[in-house]
Image (cartoon, rainbow, N blue to C red; front, side):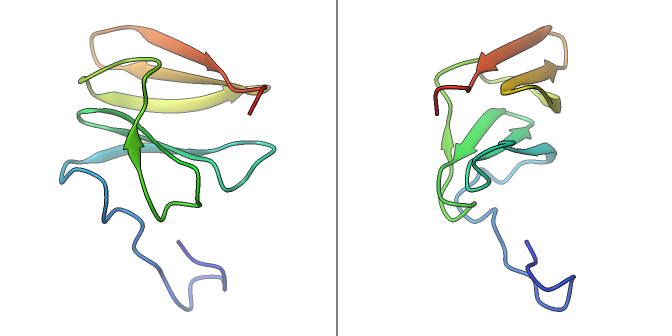
Amino acid sequence: MTHDGGGRWTQLAETLPDVPIRAVAVHPRRTELLYCGTEVGLFASEDGGANWSATNEGPTNCSVDQLFWMDETLVSATHGRGMFRIDLSAV
């Protein structure tokens, strides 16, 4: 992540599994809430990427290839398991 247009970068993946990251999404209202689609599922961070944990909603243990927002609903497209949505308007 960078806050100065790319002059300095901070590693955010230290607490994620060592697998490919396919997609990243930032909550449209609460920018410290980040979501990461990986080869092994969906992960979330409530502190701007300092710490990550697997989510209890949506796809599990499958490749999440794309993340996008429909208002405050996060939609994840997976490889072979379909699409899932998580309403995050209450967070």
